[in-house]
Image 1 (cartoon, helix red, strand yellow):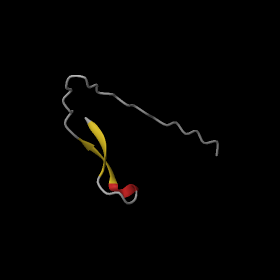
Image 2: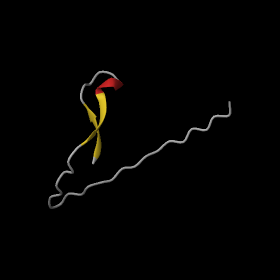
Image 3: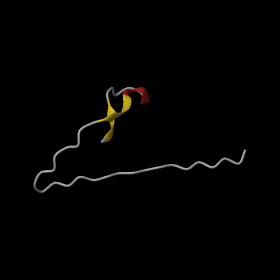
Image 4: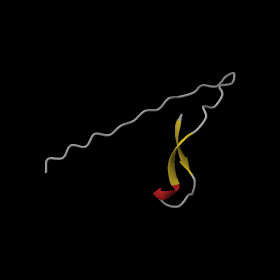
Length: 44
């Protein structure tokens, strides 16, 4: 799965999008899928 990983707590340059293994789900836990997008319309 893809994950946003903070490698350095400095600027936005310390944030990376990486492929990581899915975490195992244990009893009493849930996995939440988050999706987001942005649409910018410019009338220039």
